[in-house]
Length: 463
Image 1: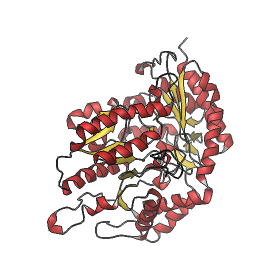
Image 2 (image 1 turned 30 degrees about the horizontal axis):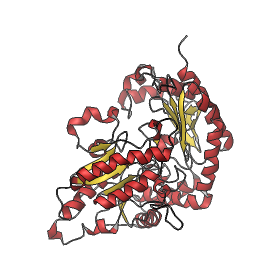
Image 3 (image 1 turned 90 degrees about the vertical axis):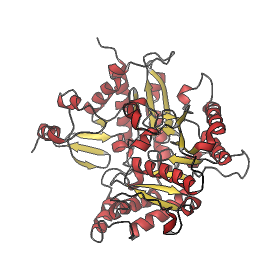
Image 4 (image 1 turned 180 degrees about the vertical axis):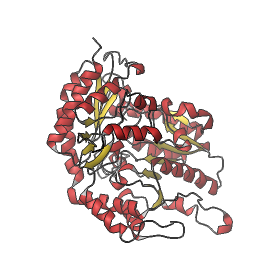
């Protein structure tokens, strides 16, 4: 049997890992973990050690690895059509998936791309191009929330907030208008999530009053700023943002790439926005002008993304060829039949498993099993939205004083969890859980126990 060490050597000779300082791996400071196979919530290396995938393989895997229904659907699709150019051609899996996404989102037009970043790129371009086609070429800027993250391609990176991702490339980027985040970690003691998010909206309204004439769209991650440290906010902010965008003539782009498909407790996070006017009979939820989808779209099986949008936006590009209004944006693997088939199989599982109700029970279990962390002397906050639970480690809770980044406390937690057979991937000093929906009660308890241990290990000062 080939050893893990053999695979590490071969990988380090040629492969450049994402979002990684490769010296950590090459020096042995942080050994690569070669994975040979996966099943359900478990990953297994070449020497038989198993790891519980507590982060759903970068938030993509909804149903557990190699779910039989998705595997069967892919095998069937391979017998008929693997791929075809999508410009000038179409096929049943792409059509059926677009129909279902339209019904779920309330947005009737579906534009396929390859990954989350490319979906954001397409949405930004569509918004700008809509206003250009509509005779408003002065609308060229975007509004984004501080601490937001929307991907690594240049347009998506430009509207992201965390400096660790964007500062190096600042000379290459668009210059959006950033507004303070509604992130409720920053609320004052005793202040409710709703009140804090409402007050933070005042900053957005002021910017819209001053800049709406030159702004194409506001882009945000509904409810949870994931790569920004799993920071969370009250859904009222979505309602207020939707109202303000309508009032000032600005598009709303909802980046549901990480939070869609049940992660936050509803199918889409936007569904949790409270009614615009509190009262009997008012409709809950908002509909953005663009919704970006990826990650869980195929159940974590194959890369696929989509931008859902309104009919009136589609119609702004619909014209005689000579008008040159077409959206000339493409990807080689747009609408790949295999990926679309996986997406259809994943959507079917929501109905067959009653996943949203089951996830609500699982969310309560995660909260209960992490109770000890809520009084931990180095935990400033344990927060949860649906099946996303985050733990904010700090040096001093009373002062909200962070551990220095150079101490790499999150890395300590990561290493401890790996030793115990659990995959955590901390965001700095924030540890989080975002497990596959297939996780059982016993596995969930193990995952939470290891998380609690990891906090202890990470926050302990060296002897």
